[in-house]
Length: 388
Image 1: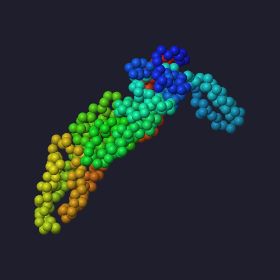
Image 2: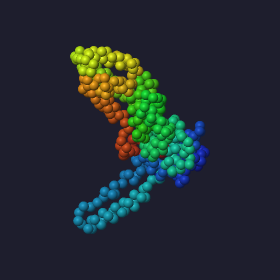
Image 3: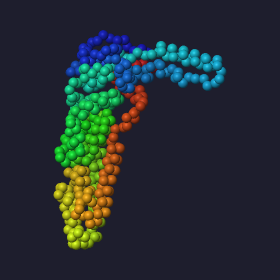
Image 4: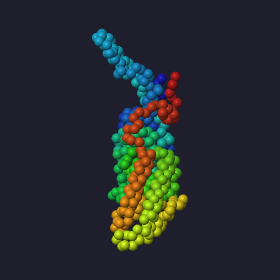
């Protein structure tokens, strides 16, 4: 089997797509027309295991059918046998070197976004002068994330993307400040959506920050507006549904805690307050319900709670009431227990959610099987392989 012989260039090659030591070319769709990118097969093979399989298809390499030379050994004590085995290993290594297959000469990348592909190629070839000098647009960041997910080269781009995200979403820690103090001003929901999805691909800490903000600070209407993930985004399509489900679970748990506290106080509502020598509690219980209405929240919980946010409900007095001096002598332990339960429940629900949606741990994918990409390899390389 042999690869096709190179053909003269029939398409233009933009200078930004021409790299040193190029030995193959990529057909791309750039600025409305097709063009060639001249690249180094070694640079591509080092940058992406998928690109490596495109260039050197595992099933098309006769070297893969030779014995695994390094494991060839003789465990006995016969010196002559040991010498023969050593000679055989050397001969096999020489034979293997004669079977090395040259990379394919042309790959079809016209389906990929050329601007995003250029960024990846520049990093792979360490040609940084043709990379965007300013901050890439959000759409370009998404396209870069799509290609990095598709070609399993996120680690190569992560340091650059980290800096771009800092400049785009967190200048002077703006977004971090908003996430820490959301009651002062709220970051646009779309900001957190872009930040979360891009950070998901590159396994950056900002994923957890953005996901936490959507979970704690958004009501159902806001989450519904971003429920449908844009087509082609390299993330699970159930992200927002998972956040909505966890949010609903936690809100119901908060109300159950508040209702239990309210019921626990009723039997002792006629007890006299030690401070005022009056039945203060019988006056306080109705006020407990009014605390919800002050925040525009129903009590007891009704089915329509779409405008509630986790933080609004958590910040109600039952989560910190043990600190209020006016109730120090009014069943402080009940309030303390309710506050502790609310805090632990919130942490439990969030941890369960994050464990479900978080990016996989770095290094979780260590092996790439060529067969997994056989369809894409055929589409990129053309039907030149003879699988015999």
